[in-house]
Amino acid sequence: MPNLTHPAADPAVERDQILVYASQRQPYHILSYIDQIVGNEATPDVEFRFFEGKLPHADMDVIHLHRSTVLFGKGSRWKRLAKLADFVLQAKRHKIAVVRTLTGADASGKGGRLRRAANRLLDQVTTSYIVLDEVTRTPKGRPVTVIPHAHYRERFLGYPRSAQVPGRLLRIAPTLPKGVTPALANFFLTETPGLSLRVVGKPLSGSYVGLKEMAERDPERVSLLLETISDGSTVQEVTAAELVLIPKVVEIEDMQVLYLALSLDRPVLVPATDLTRRLADKVGAGWITLYEDALTAEVIDSAVTNLRATPPSGSPRLDGPDLEGTAKMYAKVFREAAAAGRR
Image (cartoon, rainbow, N blue to C red; front, top):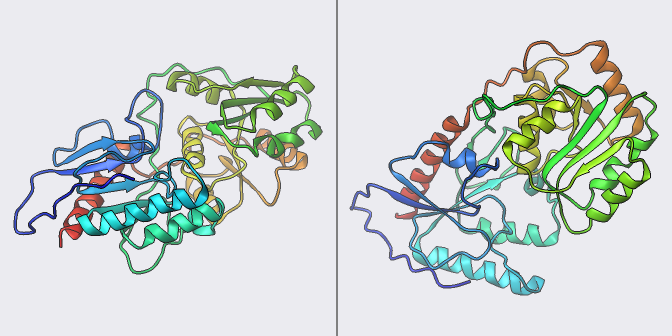
C-alpha cells in the first residue's frame, strides 16, 4: 500500500468540491453498483475517481469501499492484512474519511475469516456506514445511512424485450460463484413438464467445469452463456424467463439481480430472509416467492405451479428511488463524511 499524500485541510476553509475515490470501475454500458452512486448526471460539488485493486497515490477527501477486501491486493493472508493495516494508519494520519457499504454477508460474518478480519480493521477508521436495507446490522458508534437499492425502470426504458419462454428458469449474475452448480443441481429432479434452465454470467474460478458438466448432462434443457454481457442482452435474457432463480441474497450483486428482475416485471424465487420477506410484502403478491433452506426440486416445482395458478398482475410496486435519487443520497453522505474527517 503506497503512502497517501493528503495534507490535513483547514476546517475554517470552505471547499467547493470534495474528491471521492470509489473502489469500483468507472461506469459504462454494463450495469453495476457504481451506477447507484454516481447516477447519470454529474454532482457539481462531488468529483469521483475510480480504482480497482491497488489504491493510487492521491489526495482525497473520502474513500468509499463497497467491500472490505478490495484493498487487499495479492499475496499471503498475512501480507494482505498488513496492506490493509497500513491503509488504516494512513487514513488516520491524513484524516481521510472512510465510507463503507455493508451487506448481509458482512453483518452475518459470511465470506470467510479474512473478510471478517478486514472488517474489524476497517471499523477502526470508518467514518460512516451505508446499508441498502433496514435489517443489516452495523457496528455501533458510527453514523449509519439507509440508502435503498435503486430500481432500474428508467434505466431500461426503450430496450427491446424478449417474448417469455414458457418454463424457462434463469440464473443470471454478473459473476457466477463457485457454489452455483450445487445450488442448481436439483433442477434435474424437477417434475414439471417443459422446464428448462438458462445460466448466464461470467463464472468465477471453480464454477466453469461444473456448469459445463450440467449442460452436457442434458443439453436439451440446460443452456449456458458464460460471459459478461451488455445491458441490452441482459434485458433480453431476463425478459425471456418465466422465473428468475436467486439462490442467495447477501451481496450487492445479489440485490442487483433481484431489483433487475423486478424492474423488468419478472417474478423471482429467493431464500426467505428478513430482507426478502419485507420486500415481498412491499412489491405485491406473486412477484417474490420465498423458500426455506435449500433450493430443492420440490421448491422449484411448487413455485412454478403457484405462479401459473395465480400469476402476478400489473408490475411490482417499486416505490424506492431511481438511480438519480440514490446518487443524491450518496453525495450527501460523502459531503457529511468529508466534513467530519476534517475536524
